[in-house]
Image 1 (spheres, rainbow, N blue to C red):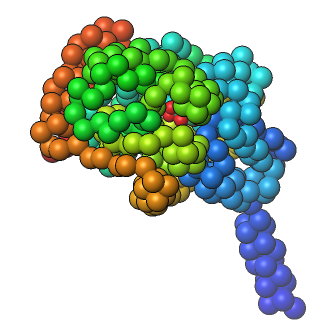
Image 2 (cartoon, rainbow, N blue to C red):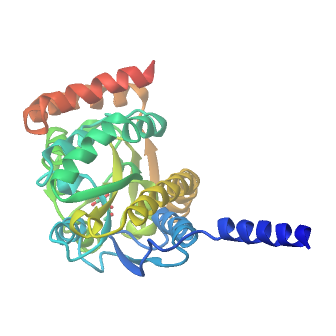
Length: 334
Ligand code: TF8
């Protein structure tokens, strides 16, 4: 009898500890705005993040993703977060420099040499420092996801040296550093929201745009372009931003689950980009586009020509921020 009692008690304890306490979790519908389409690797990341949230919250926290700018462009969606009317957005940092000027540091041409060093800087103390600036602007950055290395596409001619940019009407993000980088190369740079790019290319209002291969693929830009050059002129991160006003109303367990699961999603998203990059490039070639690479000499010339952009924007980004990332990169490259 005593044995039975002990066994029952032990079983009861085992059950109690095996069932996670979901008490801190309420039913949450989290709208996540995206400018890119559902077949972009961000889709894989969001699925992984959802699976993680299901486990942690007992199915109470639900992400609802909106694609193709259905909830507005990057900037518009971010402002909706700041005013507390929308939960989340996956956005490039570049259109947000009007809100947090220091973010411009990521737009400096040829800053990151490869994805690994970008991850170290973004996921480390430099990334945390930028997150504090975002927080002060009413935005909680849950994690740095990946947009990636950007390449040029156009409909007029092969670009194999910087002189080929001459007079080319290149859409750039709404960001002064990108504007200057392309103007400095001789292009006729035109700032434009992402949502307008496809039709502007289609109607030839612009000749060119620049984005990672996976975006040229999933946003179908290859259908209205003839040439691609692997310029790798910038690595832009995605920020997984949450409205601070809404985040502050969540319980600590809910906040912690969001932060932890955004990191799970990040790792999946980065992994899928790595794989899809090659496939997207193959798809672009198969669609008949001419893909050029730059010779090492040309890469060097473009890089040297672009160096002026660093000095020109140092004050507005913040000298300590620019010097900080340069020092951090030196450390990471050791
Ligand atoms: C751009 C960006 C965009 C992303 C997307 C809208 O060119 O690279 O592709 O921010 O989320 O505007």
